Image (cartoon, rainbow, N blue to C red; front, side, top):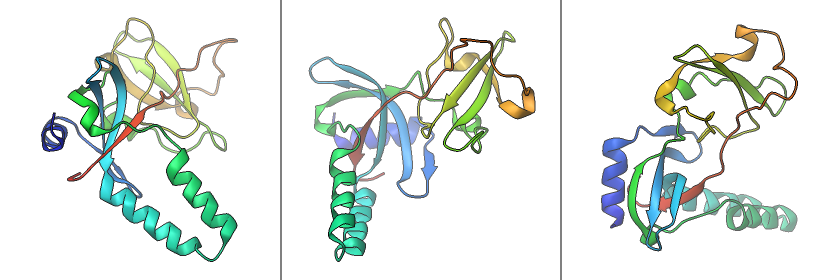
Length: 181
């Protein structure tokens, strides 16, 4: 699959999340040449990341320790997949629609955001994330289309989930950098 085909698919079929640092981020799934399936991939602008890295390197060039931390952040954090390894892209079954993600606002406590996902059948599930809202686990036998509403925990109830209740969490993802996004 050519990069232009990936970009065209994403722009035509996936509603991006707007990020003030990275720009538009398209959340999808990808099949690789070797048959591997990546259910969670964020596609974002290659040029925007390059510009950010160059800016941060310039800002920290006179402080060896900070400069090293910036280099480390750009080359050793995250998991990347190259577009030339991708044969097909499709919507991800773990990407909440943007209208639901926009309801996940603010930290419940420092470094932690907790919310309740209500399904169309009336069942409610506790969710939490430390920082990432790109992809989320789903309870068994449910799909994204089964989600009715997202509630801020403190608006729905002040009660804690039952002892040993499972919090559904963010899912790890790969990043694919492309021109044209």
